[in-house]
Length: 325
Image (cartoon, rainbow, N blue to C red; front, side):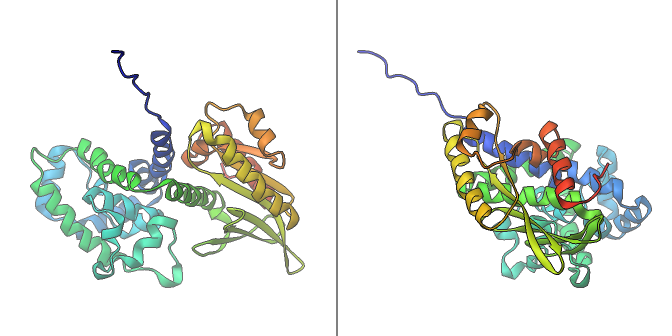
């Protein structure tokens, strides 16, 4: 009797998770914290840590060679990078659904984690957040055996992040990728900000005109510029998360349908952000001839690479703003 053939498992889901992981590094993991600490005033960070970190825990962390600010939140750091709410949630191992339940009082911070949104006029109670998280994190440090280490700081968040990714279906993964691209865009334009809402960013460009960047259903992100009090459609951006090579051309075809609608609405440029790894881009172009520019989704989410550099340049040109160094 012949042996049953062994079917090779597909890497597509793990590649999709990797796309989300590179985005998480910019929002929820140590890379994001390092960036925020480079912005925040170190003197203020130190003063605030003294408020929230118990003396015995300071000694445990010092003996382990772990910096207090790598474990405990302080308001000045969260103001520098609001998405870091997720870093401390993941370090404690709390899923989003449980963390933001109505009876936890954490709902006011959800838009900070998921959208990087901190409204100046409606600032959440960051002091109470830091005090509450400090109690849980102090317990974590005290009860870890063997001794809490810098490796724990790096790896513990991944356990919860992995289950968070695993719990999402393809549609959820695609929506998360779109939100993460929007966060990347928000970073590009932060020096020109006029207003920031959950789904809309308004900036003022070098010509003094308002430019609106909005999350939408179709296209995923739209760039509009104000002329004589009227918004004119400029760029339609379609974002196709996921990485199944066999389905890539279907995703490109879906982008084409959206761009055709955008063309009827008067948009002038059409960009598609999609996984390009292992694909023939010329074939993708045949599936969406309306697309002017193709960008690799992993590079845009990770904010590095040739496609990210090109995206930054094209975006700055479309929005009419100088390219940030």
